[in-house]
Image (cartoon, rainbow, N blue to C red; front, side, top):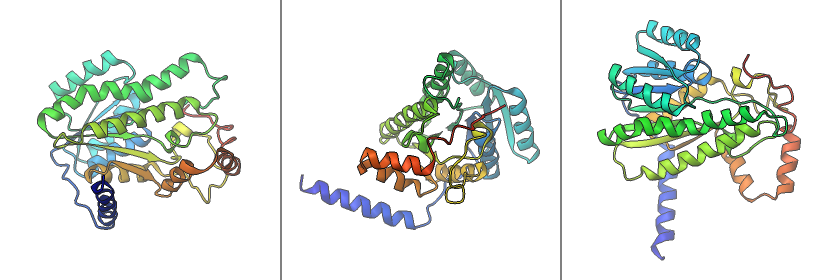
Length: 294
C-alpha cells in the first residue's frame, strides 16, 4: 500500500518524459498488413500509408470489389505488393474461411487493422431493426471474428499487432447516430480488454485510434457548428498518425490531441453542464443533414 502511490507517480512521470522524446519506430519491411474496409475512406488511405512506409505486403478486405480492386491497383502501381479479398466481417464463417485462404495464398498476417464500419445516422425510433443489427455485427462483432482468426498465429510467432480505428463518439456520443456510438463504445471496451490481456504476451501489442469527425464519404452531410474551431480531420492525416502509432506501439491515440480534454471534462462535469456543451456545439442537430455513402 505504501509503495503503490510511489510506483504510480513514477510511471506517470516516466510516461510524460517519454512522450516528449522521439520514439523509435519498428521496421515494416517484413510485415504483412491486413486492413478491413480497405477499399475506401480511411481504410484506403491506411493501405496507401502502410505501403508508403515500407510494409512487405498489404491485404485489403471489404464488401465492394470495385473499390478494393481500384485501391489494390493504385498501390501496386506505386511498387508495393497489394492484393484483396471480398469478405464481409459481419459474417463469422466467411471471415474464418477467408482468413484460411489468406494464410495459404499470402502468408501469416502480422498486423491486423480493424477499420470496417458503417453508420446509419438515425435516432433509435427512426432506425430499422435490421440496420441496427448490421451496425453492431460489422462495427463490433466483426472485430471478434477477425481477431480470433489472426491473433492465435501472432501469439504463436510472438510477433504481431492488432489495431482498431475507433471514434471519439465511443466516449462522447451524439444524438442521431445511436447505432454507431453504441457499436464504437463496445469496440473500445473490446480493445481495452484485449490490450490488457496481451500485456504479458511478448511481441504482440495493440493500438486503438479515436479520431474526431473525419471528412470521408461515410459521414457525408454531417455538419459541425463551428468548423473553424473544430475542422473535420483529413483521412490521410488519420492514416499517417495511425501507422506512426502502430510503429511506435502506442496503445491509445486521440485525434486531435485536444480530445483528451473532452474525455477529462466528461469524467467530472455534471450532466447539466454536458448538455449545455452539446447545445453550444450543435451536436443535437449535426446529423440533421446527414446523407452517408451513396
